[in-house]
Length: 184
Image (spheres, rainbow, N blue to C red):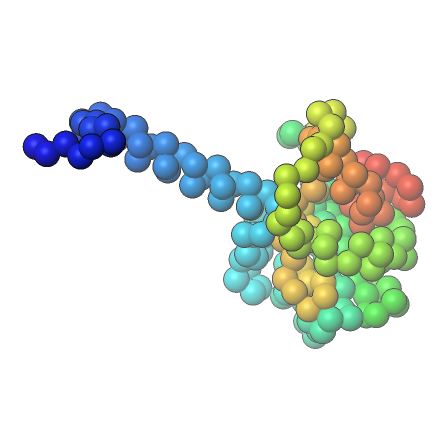
């Protein structure tokens, strides 16, 4: 064995190599989980397939237009683990709410969606954010469908300050009356 000057020689046995492989796999899973949580890798299921929440799939609606001005969103809201799931729908073309909308205040929901735009559903990765470590409640809302000509599949929670702010920004879409928290 030839030793090179200035470089220490380390022998890595099978146990060390195995730990490196495990650490690499854990790191990859952590990155994928973080990216998924940010909404970057959440492709919707096949068109027409029901989602796991039991809510109607927005892409299967008859005559649905996926133009940039069309809004076709299904919301599944769970207030607590094991609680019943509440289903809502927002249908709109441009700034006009369609008759099939089932939210308590569909006009306020549409206004919130238009105000925040695609960034609320498709966040762009950026520098890490410091979020307050506060708990806003166990509510979880899953939003699927179409907005801005793109398929949407986003999850909203109230697990820290950043997620609470995101939730409050779309409270009317998540089933709340204007200004509410989203809990029904």
